[in-house]
Length: 241
Image 1 (cartoon, rainbow, N blue to C red):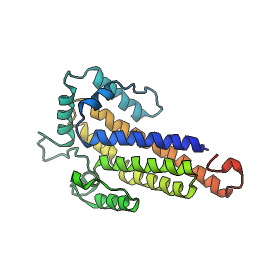
Image 2 (image 1 turned 30 degrees about the vertical axis):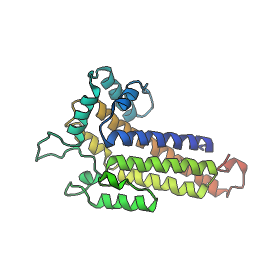
Image 3 (image 1 turned 135 degrees about the horizontal axis):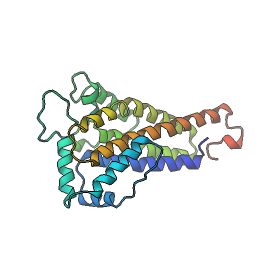
Image 4 (image 1 turned 30 degrees about the horizontal axis):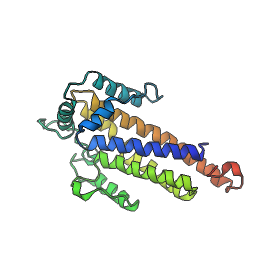
């Protein structure tokens, strides 16, 4: 069973990871972000194939990056995710909206966006309206998971078992229905337009991070079931142990 301290640590780390990935996917990187990324020591053997491949691609990019990495990555972001300079009628572009990948029409503002918005409202999460972007943009979906992870860390530290269970169940459901259901398709489509390894690495890291989160969240949920089965009668099963 995962200990309470381990849960708090996991949720804190998840909040930071998904906040970072959300920012990377929302817009072009600035000089400060690129400098921080280039100095980062990415792990080589996480045990997750997508994470390992993703980190390797990010390391490769910075090993051979152009002197003006900001301009290079801005052009790559625009080409891959904004379809700038991409002219095609026969294949989908990698614009990062869930509706584009899950609706029959492959256009924005479809059922998945409506469901995502409803879930945000139920959990008191709001996308900044000044951004004027559909709520099923991958950056917002990752930000939602980051926010839920922040709340989960607080619930775990406070010993709120019922609140934590609901939070974990909501995260699992959202990851399954609104991230892992299309992030692989986004990555495969992006590969058709990418010329650099950086964003391909980022997409693999997103996919791998979600896979790892699902494993830990399932384990946490199973542990909560064990706690409820004994009704907290033994100190070894208490959430705050």
